[in-house]
Length: 312
Image (cartoon, rainbow, N blue to C red; front, side, top):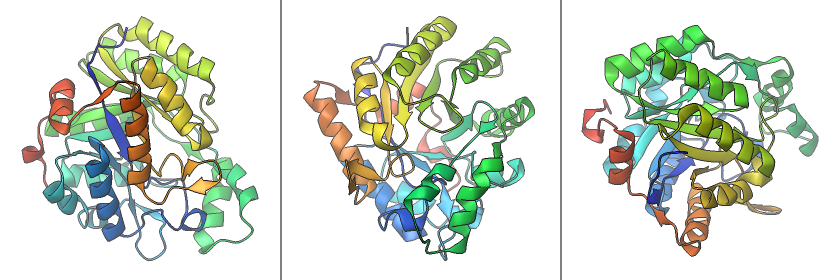
């Protein structure tokens, strides 16, 4: 069974690299918008904020450390939230580009993708007749031939350069059942030490579907592989976000919400901010008599190095 905990960790994924500016006027793009929405999400109850960067001119994903450094210090100065920086980056970025900002910032946490996979965004083309920027259509169409690279060599490189060298811990993102076995291999080889924070991801085309039975299956598999050496968390893409997070929370999971994963707050209604989604899942959890973990409690649970040991 996943490690027992008395409180639920709420992560907010603030902008990501999936959605484009045309899809929502509320998607944070500029460093100011990312900082403001991250701070508001933390105030609403998120203990971890997961961050990508975007080119402030047109909103395309960027790995540029200088852009990250325009919002990371503001978030740290205005919240106690754990800052979690992507190592997944966005389509077309090299592994070296994806690691540039984390190596510059040396955060407490980073995302860590547990296997190479197809990552299909192209079905979203059917929802929009026109796009604000040329890159948006290309971004979605290009996903038909995009393989999200996360080789075993890439994993070892990240663990060495970020984990061993800078003490960064990871949100291990598992998009399918095979990724759980990759995680087990890292543990068996002694490349990571428990407890591990396993984020099971549902609803990405190329990974496991957003079906309640799949949530149960992934949990059962993780229990068999990891025993009580892991903390479990769930995120679901699109309309399944709140439903699967609620279901998983009842089963003992931590949860992740945010505009990276879904642009909506309810059927047919765009979320006006990341804080909207955090406030909604917090209300649901508290009405289920579940308590929300504070950043200090998260740091203790996940054995993080502390916000005083980052470079931003």
